[in-house]
Image (cartoon, rainbow over the protein chains, first blue to last red):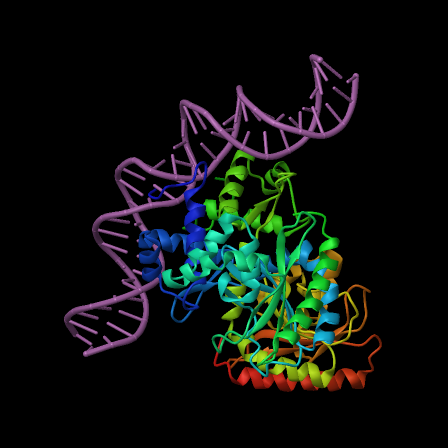
Length: 247
Length: 247
DNA sequence: GTATTGCCTTCCACATAATGAAAACGTATG
DNA sequence: CATACGTTTTCATTATGTGGAAGGCAATAC
């Protein structure tokens, strides 16, 4: 077709997921010609791909603007995936007690292609009305993401760096060691929209970081408070990790 | 290729999503030959498709058993989809207050291809350790699903029925009218693993049910209690619905 | 130790099925 | 009403995906 196609792989599938990725970036609904240009595919090809994806509800087309966006079926698939994810099942029983002792919102996050995805949460009474739910960020932007990216394979760490502009990238590279070794990491109110949180890794039987446990922090948390909360998180993470044999 | 292919649609994409659907059913990891048989495709074809999907992390292959399961990328896509879903954004601010006044877990559910998918939740202190998170059920099995399926287009209602065995299906068909007209529906402890809940529809500007708001019920809830909780839910649903112009 | 089974993976000739240029359609804009 | 923009369809060409058969690689049986 065009690109350096990976061996024994279907170009059509590659193009379809390329479109899904483009749709997952930027505005919720995007127009055909724009997608064609960004993907490097011709307009009719993109149209056919999108039509096929619409048929499966992986993509939906806004009837008035005829623009395309991700469809509800992705949510169903994800739910199925997450419902059977061992790490989530292992952590789930600890989340409510954690929330109740800490008093703040508790999150479970995983690393996906350089991004942190917050896949489970138990809301505390903090945070007011804006819950900022269903979050996806470049991994190094949040404490949970740093915990995960720094402990992942070099390949995954590279992917995490690839989500960044060059200046932030260099800053991140220098902190790899620090992030990998710290028992917990905290982001204390850097940007206003990134809420501050503490995160600890959840290690499986073979020592791999398969998820992160994170807690929202109150506005100006002392180091002692952060350490205390991190202790609670770490205890739960260890307990859950023990029930997970490996990978 | 084989099937009654829909007009102007790519068979390869159709086969790829067919595999994703098969992977979303049954055990978390499934073997190649089984998937080939169930899909009606030949083994090499399935292998190529899966390999292509693995490359995109939509599917992952267990390194020891070399079996295939859904991959983490579906979670990332879903999060992106849900994060931009207007109904979720509209409902989010009401969920914490709702949880605090009701005192039990509150859910937001949507209808996807005949299934209820619980896409947001605010946990109360009820329920003990088993949170039963990331749920997907045939729509008519839960109160939230009934609310949604009964109010959906005939096509979506049909899909909901298609998820059922024949005996349950006939029973469901008779209750369409009842489910559509009731201001709220409750499942009061039928099967033990299906927790009882009350659900109300969330209607957008054009009167379409775009989501359901549901609350977990205590073991033996009186009709009065159910009605009270439903009232709280309905009020929030109306308030959120007002901020949504249309579909 | 060797044979057998079951499964995943690769190879290759063939024909289906995806592709891109161009044209038609529909709809908003001046 | 004319123009411009974006979506959708058509159609010939050929690249691309397909399926049969063979090759690996474990685990289990003999």
